Image (tube, rainbow over all chains, first blue to last red; front, side, top):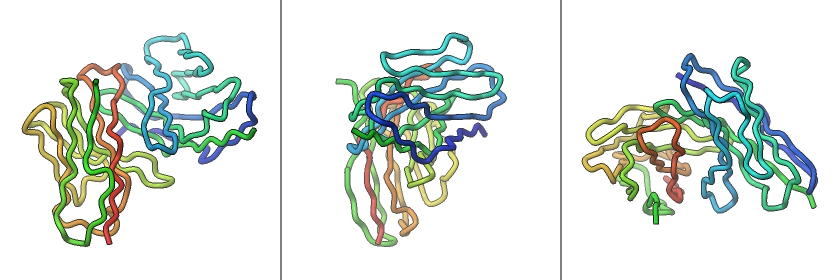
Length: 111
Length: 113
């Protein structure tokens, strides 16, 4: 079965600075998708960004961007100009026919 | 509005008392799944369904049952809940295409005493 690993249980960043959250995955598939979800204290799961495995270009959504290294099976999330509202749990997810999640990284943003 | 609706949002029950957590989606999605979220473990898949009458076990299916009689509904059944099933549960749905995101319900906080 595919596995997703987030090796940073907690991260902290100063407001307006940049932080990178790590994610690695294991699969033998060639056609799959990767996602980052944000979970604020409200518990709602919010899609942050998605990446198609067949695309070499890294996805970007405003202040959020990814560094996708297919050969290394790595999919990190970079948050630029961090804001207080970015504080949340962040989950990395892998999807082919079905979706698997990592253990999550709790991000704290310091004013 | 496109949404996944889970009920109840909070539930406290006693060991052994059967319960059902309902999940309904209005997006005509083929794929639905259940996850439990525990600290340090992330979201672990309990069961999933690729379409009506098609269900399969995820990573942690013991102690749970599901059914998919209609496309929109995917209830999670705990026949005899135990304290180790105390957790935060999420239902999710997505279309059959691989690239589409999963949409999540609001979560159900279950406590078994």
